[in-house]
Length: 234
Length: 234
DNA sequence: ACGCTAATTAACCATCTGGTTCGTTACCAG
DNA sequence: CTGGTAACGAACCAGATGGTTAATTAGCGT
Image 1: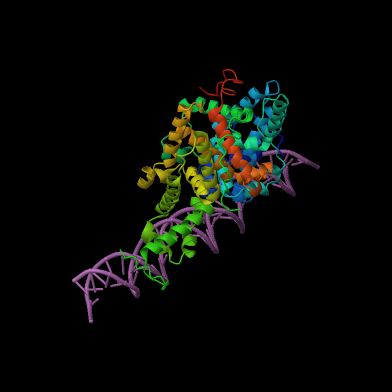
Image 2: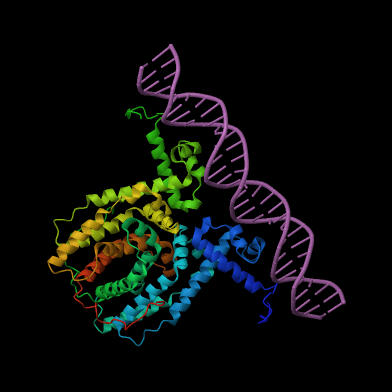
């Protein structure tokens, strides 16, 4: 392993494994996000790099493993962000709203990541399942939500019967949909879900929705319940 | 145009344009949903058909136009379903819950359609935008939601400040996420969002959430509002 | 009966694609 | 200063891929 000399002045290093790897990953991330797994071309990725296609196979072995490492790095970024979130000092209602807003902002700020997740779902998460690194990557967000939920219930302000994982799904779904499906939604309903001048509106809407759901005093919990509706098949 | 003889008994027709077209579209829908636009192969689609690759180009001209027709047909199916929904006789709260449940059930019942929408979003809805048929395909659901919303406000039960399109986005987001992202979500959080024994739970959760949001008497509308939080960039 | 055309088929093609072979070079240890 | 190895680059390859050419046939109108 090179001792990271990083000579401030002499920019033109010719042998720097770490930099070459990172360069490839950067370009690959953009290309996979832009064109999908099958759509992205190794030749094109190589061309946009300061190195060659051979180096991609030298460092990553195959297109699949390259994509897997792209995913690993992308997920590592959120985990890092989530670990920084600090809402312990807030009351449960404010804390949940703050967390929802952070999730909202994160999705807004990382559309490439959203695309990668969509792409990985098309492939039924086969790369995530094949990755040891991603298997042990727990989500700090879940634990934070769990703590806020406990506190809110202890204080009697949260009445909804949800656990942290499902609440995380609920919050994520709105944030994800807004970014991931903005193209088809915009084309079909003529509304740009990511228009800048509507962003604050949606951010508030998300928070309102989550708080209303958690604190809902039965207003909509039993009322208007459709009678024994079977979902279709048994 | 063949006068659609459709001889009940003699199944083995050899020249039937409509059937050949439909056959191709059926197989193409499954293949595109399974492998994505770029991942799907014309040769493979042809092989799974009772006809040949040449026929695909004879009827559809190109891979892109084939995919566009696949999308058009898929969207036509939902529009049809939506047009059948009848909640006029229900009170606003029940009507919204019923509509949310129908949306939920539709997503549950058509995972291939969900995948096609995800795929089309990766391609930034370019095929939808190129389709005249999809441009004029309005959504009956939006109008239904609009009417329920008006009625609910008139009765004073709905207090939230949303319009039909945004509410539709909110409802769809949860339904869509649950199906589309079940693989990555399951792999990362160890929870199968589409497990049969949890389906009723999520269906109820969706309804509760929507009703709580719409009827929320300010419980969470102003309370716990994070102070002047700027979303990032200006 | 028969000609016309929509419908169909087989074989073909240029190019692209993920992956590889093999030779070369920077750079650190000794 | 020199030998070994990690890092690198050019050219190559077999199979795949979207798309085409050209010849053929079913079946309806007349």
